[in-house]
Image (cartoon, rainbow, N blue to C red; front, side, top):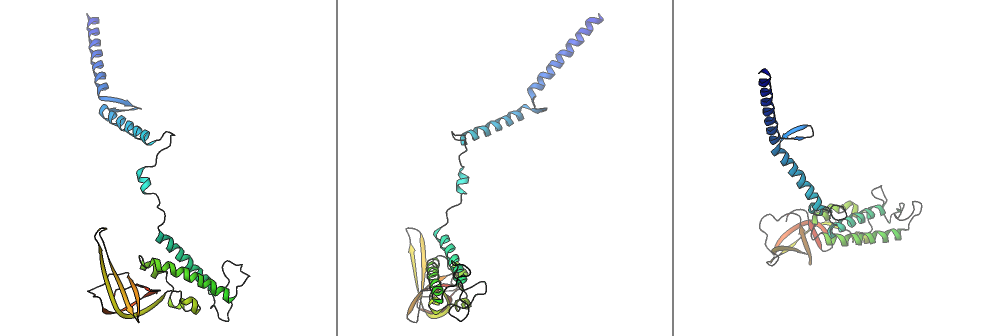
Length: 250
């Protein structure tokens, strides 16, 4: 009698244990050495499968990964024409100063002092005044050509790269004629406003007539107040041939 009761108790315990383990199997999944709920496990498995599938789509047949759209957009674009011009302008300015002996305390070209060495020659070999002046004139002309192009779109850059009046005065007269110049002019201003309805753009051109000559004005700041054509104005700016970069308003 005691034996049967013991067997019944063991059988009931086995049934209870079996049901408990079945319940645990439904609710938990063993991952490594940790148990997580089934719904969490399936979420993790789904995310891993999605990531693997995405990588498979990106990879090409050779096993390498294609460049993403983001990397294409972030790729370094080739320099614009204006950026190339600015780079050349800085190099020409540096050459112009080096030929004069600047910034290392050089001497006046054409004076009785020692003539500076042309940078392409050795430190012992000296150039004649005529050779140095010809090299200066060549660099000055190239530099002014570039400035004349840049000033139309970026007058601020031209102002930043300009030589000071003291620097300009150190060059021979022929070279100074090919170097930008700060000056103050007074005259009548002509204003032309144009609307491009097709490209949805508008432009305003300013021309100063002074001493019988016309100078195109390129402003770095907006004009304050109302300015009418044929008004008499006084302009202080940097002259680049027949173009003037104006650092302040009119």
